[in-house]
Image (tube, rainbow over all chains, first blue to last red; front, top):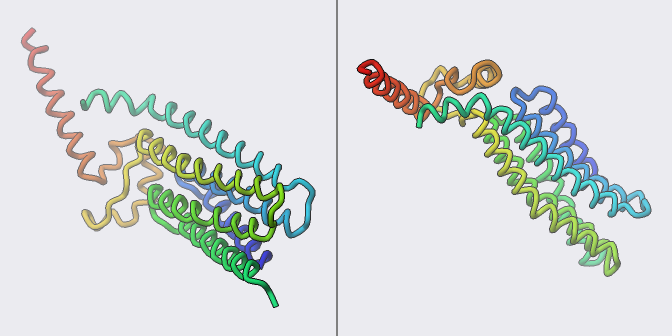
Amino acid sequence: MYYAAVIAILVTMALALIRAFIGPSVYDRMLAANVFGTKTVLLIAVGGYVLSWPAFLDVALLYALTNFVGTIAVMRFFEYSDQASCDVQDGGER
Amino acid sequence: MPSWVDLISWVCFVLGGLLCITGGVGLLRFPDFFTRVHAVGVTETLAAPLLLSGLALQLGWTLDLVKVVLIMAFILATNPTATHAMARAALHGGHRPVIFGEESERIDSEGIDSEGIDSEGIDSEGIDSEGMASGKMASEKSTSGEGPSSKN
C-alpha cells in the first residue's frame, strides 16, 4: 500500500512536470511548480517512512515551508510585473 | 491478519493516491488555467491530509506524529491560500476564463489564449462578454472625454 501511494505521487509529479513544460502561460507553470512542491513533501513523508530514513519528517516540514514561501514570492513577482501593462487599461476603463 | 488501524491507514493511502492522480490528470487535461486551478486545488487539499493521516496511523504515538500533524496543518492552511493567490494573480495579470458555448469557433481557445496573453494582453482575446462590455465602456468614455477637450 505504501508503494501504491508512492507510485501515485510519482505519476502525479510526472504529470505536473509535463504541464510545467507545455504550459501555455506562466501561471500554468507556476501552478505545476506548486503541485510539484506539495507532492515532494508527500513523497518525502511517505517514502521516508517506507525506506526508514532518519528525520525525514523534518525535511518534509522544511520543504512545505519553502514551497509556500517560494510560490507566494513568484506569484507576487508575476502579478505586479504583468499588472504594469494591464493597469493602464483598467484605469482607463474605469 | 492486519489490524483495524492498518486497514484504515491503507484505505487512506489508496484514496490519497487516487486523488493525487485525479488532480494530476486534471492539471494536464483541463482546457483553461482556472479549471486547472480548480482541479488541483480541490484534490490536493484532500489528498495531502489523507496520505499524511494514513502515515500518522502507522506511526503511532511518537514525536513523529506531532510533526505529521504540523505538516498537515501547514498544508491545509497554505494550499488553498496559494491556489487562491495564484488564481487572483492570473485574473489581475489579464487572464480571463474561457466560456464555452457563446461562440462556437472559440472551442480551440487554448492556442488563442496563449498567443493573446503573451503578445497583447486582454484586448486580443475578446472571448468573454465582460471584456467586450468594458471595451464598449472604454470607447464611450474616450468619446465623452474627447468632447470637452475638443471644445476647450
